[in-house]
Image (cartoon, rainbow over all chains, first blue to last red; front, side, top):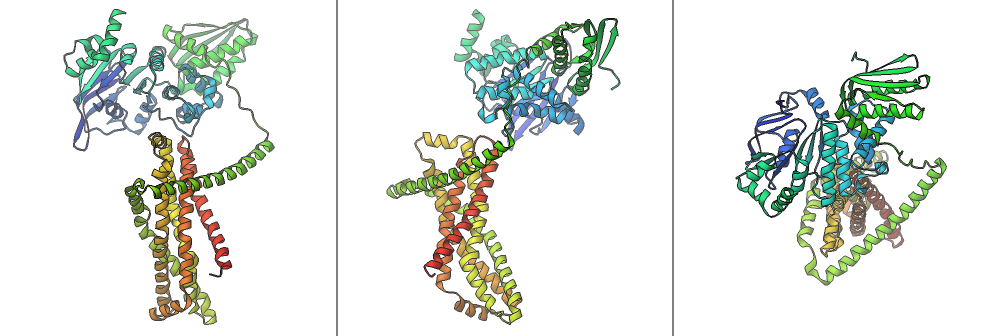
Length: 258
Length: 377
């Protein structure tokens, strides 16, 4: 399918002070795929994500999301675009003074003109889609476990039925079983809702089970991108170390023998 | 918009619906109205069918509304048939089929009178708990002080000096400015009113006694409660939120000793110092106004002042200051430790800390007034 990529990053330079984090980086995300972005701590994965969604300023380069160039977009176009993506922050970033239900309803309340009944039903529907029960809806974020917080944050990210979902380390801080469930959840949601997922992760297991394509960040650039097989053939020292090192190797072996 | 998202046709005993256009979040309210209207039409028909062929976009909002429609009909004894839905959208509809089956337990709505009574009860219990917390914190600080006295090496000198810089040194300019202005205002009012009796000179007595005994220490205490008490509560509260306090405790440190004792000690030292500086600034302001506005020359002002006030007045003011510092510090730290997980609770406790400490400072001042009167100071 020769379609335009939904996210097109070209020649991106981002830095703080005299430190350059992303150095002429280019990356495409295709529609309907789950892209996993990996890299060493401090390689700039989260910086890339935050730059694409406009939280960090860039020094050079262009970013196009769903065909809209973010530099050229006016206020209205930007707002319209922001409705078409959802973001799951690393710590969940739930509004602590609102209940779970109100957190999920917040984007709907601000962007759509819905009846209270429909809004309640939709919020509960989204919560059930991410595997929570209606009884959780009236809890406050402080009363949730780590896994539940991530699920609520995902439900909030999905509140407006976005086309793209950005996930910043969705499985970090979860036990392997919850993390596995979460990966599966992302996979099924991606299939039913036809999402494009941009996932920053550290979790090898997530890469194997959830991602269609992997992009490796090192030295401020994408040093390898492609499916897992490409990663295994890569000659880049960090990529080799990551996928064929102690932990990576175990998982790959298991996958090959399975 | 133009496009009609849902049209219904009654063909004999068959109700045929045709859906068209975008069934998405952006059109959800329009769709909801259409769906609700159509849902009531079913009983007249024997068979109902929905043709989804014309739908251009379909998301969870559309899927849920379609599901809601079929549920309403199913409840009315119909068997609606959905045709023409693309395969990948069928998955979405199936997903929606499972949700919202059991309504969330409605929180029991309580009687209004019972609610009001409960609120009063909670308030009273809270007041008692607040007092207990204050006493608890006072005790904990006392214990920590004794421990530090026994092992002086455990005292956090660096932290104390850092706090002293923030609480005392950096507060000096604003305290001087405010007390200078207050002294000037008292002097002006005194001269203005005493002039009617030709007793302008007594305004010097007024300024001297009022400033040294009451106003100096009160203004400074209120300023410090607003300035440093609030920041103590916010600091300790956000440390509590981020589990820093728990981390300290697990490493074998007593948070009271590490965080709270230096802060309270600094307040106990800083308040007399600031009170002294503030009182001097107020007397200076009063003198300046007396000279410029009342025509009382600085020489006369000073000699009148030495006659009017005694060391007792000065001592009364200065004696109160450390106690007020203690009260502000204890309230601020106790409120900080009460902070729970949310940002809202941090704001709530910071407000409570300032209100409570100002209130207690004034109550304490009243108690001291009675005490000093009874011992003849």
